[in-house]
Image (cartoon, rainbow, N blue to C red):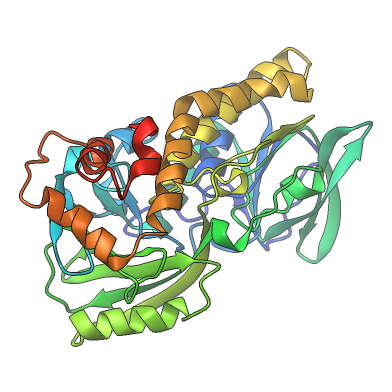
Length: 408
């Protein structure tokens, strides 16, 4: 890890005992969990963050792209977890027509391409340095609920179960989260609300290291898209995601075909699969003594699938609200609504708009996508962000995008 501490104050399989009470327990050590734990510890509270896997940040389940301004709000950039810097993005229609956006205006997924394994551990290190206790290979198996309030968790650690009490539990345990469901929150995710994804790390290929690329088309990724994110030294993350209700082909087979067609001489050195929620956020992300953040709250962008920045923003809001609620000795659902209101005000409206755009775009034919791209081909988008691009597309293609006209 090029000098970065891997163990800090993490508990693993060495027999270390967790206490039976903390102010806050954070379940999941991804970006949302680590930022929440760090924030809470900074307030001087006693916080435990648990992670079911033995290594934080592994396996990687995303394209690893983030916007520079957004990431700098939470952590100082470090070359150890930056694989590449890009200056913009290119979007390709099925017929190859290209639309190009600059780095600053490409959205929250373009700027740095991360080494997520190193990045997630760096976030956890910062939480530990702030005073959080971290326990890996520790799985939450149930919630402790009394009089309608979440009072802690039951955790499985080194083969034994332990009840751990807390004033607040923050569920940041990913798309497969059980924490919310155990608390009575409806976390049902329809097949159309999840992108099933496959990604290769491909070496020894010629690509533009300055641009992220996105490819649309029914033969490439039906009801989804493919991506190529440079990782330096002739390497790239090449992956795709398709809607979970598409049964015509498996993502891995589509990805193999995409790579074979464009990068046949490349060498696949890593392979990951996973799911990304694209349903829009849960209607409810709090209960008495409980908050959900990140993919557990379905806070990834429905259009792009990007979730790192939203997760970190939500983790910060959740941490601050948890600290203030405990100080006031009120962890009721009504009090924790401050978190619900906070994250919805920060990025909830943007998510709703992205969901509407996504729901329309997945119904478009390849011909429609080609017409949209051709309508703006050659236009100068050096000062236009993704939202501005959508505005232009709606104005130039009112018939195709009629249902979106009121949003733009």
